[in-house]
Image (cartoon, rainbow, N blue to C red; front, side):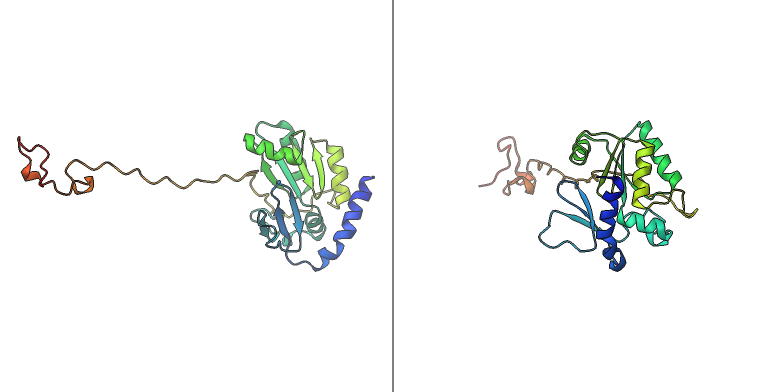
Amino acid sequence: MALGSILVGTALACATGWASAQTVYRIVGPDGRVTFSDRAPTSDTPSQSVSTGAVTEPTGTRLSDLPLEVKQAATKYPLTFYTSKDCGACDTARRYLLTRGVPFTEKTVISNEEIQALRKLNPDGTIPFATLGAQHLSGFNENDWSAYLDAAGYPAQSKLPSSYRPAPAQPLIPKVIAPAAPAAAQPAAPGSPASGNQNVEPERVTPSNPTGIVF
């Protein structure tokens, strides 16, 4: 199917939702797949985590403040960008997105657990990787990425305000800080009340009664 047909068909399906939705829900399923909806999840999806509001809103820049053309494309076809350490192609792709003025969410893939999570989206594990709405962009090829972004309606030249700042990259799997373990109980000194020997009286400890126990 032609690229234009893929995205245009999806755009028609989303047109009504764009006109009426006030809140966009970003839903992460148990398999790590991200979907977007104007309907809040129900109690039937307890394993899904949800954040509301602007789905591609970077720190310090609200999606509602962006030019209409950018805002419409970013809402219909949000771009999530997966990168790793020491990845020259990732740096090239990031510069391309920033130069073109495409808002994106960046996820870093470093740990083995994150690599396995990425493979659920991209079986060959190629980095850089991006999701543009439902489309998958594996590896970076400027011509390919440009064609998809054009079809999604992103401006060919940056229209972002000078105040725009992308959000800092976040780990694909958020780090969970385990609660501190309770301090181990210290053994009570012999003869102390906590030792369980309640009948010990220190003054009764004598050579003939070294334990000081009173019956």
